[in-house]
Length: 124
Image 1 (tube, rainbow, N blue to C red):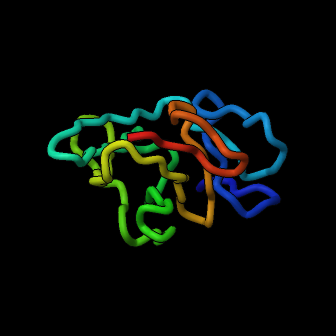
Image 2: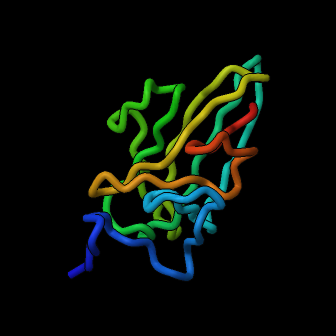
């Protein structure tokens, strides 16, 4: 059974996360994330990649591109030890996003193009 701690949030494994420079109990970056991008015909396909089991349970990528809807882009296992969600965005645009795991656990992407306080930023 996973210890949810005092915050009610499932903690990330210590080797996979580190504290964000900004204070706050839910501001962690997952270090082994990957953002893959392919641009064609004025669109950029962004693939958000996380380890299959870290954090445990379902994870979604949410952002301004899906109106912060956790049901829009859940990450799916691809059988190689990772899980992904793919999003097609306009080329040459900037978007805010975060990951949402089970238990209302929000975290950022260390490999994002930047951060605007609470959110990760992505440039296509």
